Image (cartoon, rainbow, N blue to C red; front, side, top):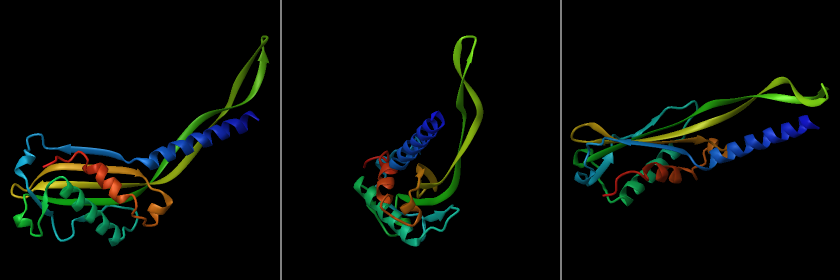
Length: 188
C-alpha cells in the first residue's frame, strides 16, 4: 500500500512539473548596454532566409514563415518600421529554431517496510528507484544586429518542453513565444 502511495505521489509530481514547464517558456534576453535604441527606426531581415535550424528534428518551412510573421508584427508593435532592403535598415534580424531530445533522471529512495527495533517503529529504505522522463525541448532565439556596424545589439531566447501537438507541427505557441521573447525589446 505504501509503495503504491509513493508511486502515485511521484507520478503526480512529475505530471505537475511537466505541466508547469509546458505552460511558460524559459525566456532569456541580453543587449549591448552601450547601445542607444533611440537611434533606430527601421529593421529588415538579415538575409533572404533569416532562419537557422539547429535541431534533431525537421522544421517545417511553414513554422519558419509563422515565426517570421510573428517577429515582424511584434517589432512593428514596438514602433519600428519594416523595410525590404537591408541596406536601408538600421537593424537586421535573424532567428534560430530547433528541438532536441532530453532526458530527466529522478533517483529516489523507496521505503517499503516498517520494522520494530528497541521498542520503536522505523521506516527502512530498501533501495533507490531511478525513473527517467524523456521529452523534447524546443528553443527559439532572436538576434538583432546594428546593420551599419555589423554588430550584435540584442539577443533573446525561449525554450520549453514541447507538447505532442507542437512536435507534430502545431504553430499555436509561436506567437506567444515570440511575444515573450520580445517583451524586453526596447520600445521606440
